[in-house]
Length: 224
Picture: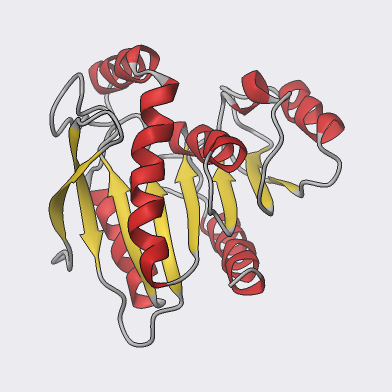
């Protein structure tokens, strides 16, 4: 698949520069979207997701959130890739993550509303960004294992979450904690495992991915 965008450099609030995959919308612009990586970095899979959203009318930015520690990191779906990705995620400051995401939001809101979505690690980032960043119109987070760690924080924009009932890394008890703490936040549970949106993974579940996307697009449209 030929990618439609390119990697640009943005400067965060602390002066650090980070890479960001950027793709312009096809046709009429519906809004801007920050699309947040899994622990594997901004891989071809993430870039393809960005391109798909661009085909739906979104200007998309996918920040390389590990650049302060490992420039241009892209890990494979292997034990080593998972281990390295987890280490980088754990060592990356949440303040830096929020600052980098806010930089992307600031770019996108120059020409309209800005939304955020993310997967795995990015699902947790989407939740934290919804709680801490400014000027987000809506957020949709996919199977964020760390959401429960920030359950005492409250989103400042309309937010939905997606989890897989068969996810071996996120117990349903954690999902129930999120539901109980935020009864106004729609939390959708699918008959799927972790990573059900990624066609690169064994847990890919097309019906769940399509339904989650439908709900995400409806959320963005409603809050445009």
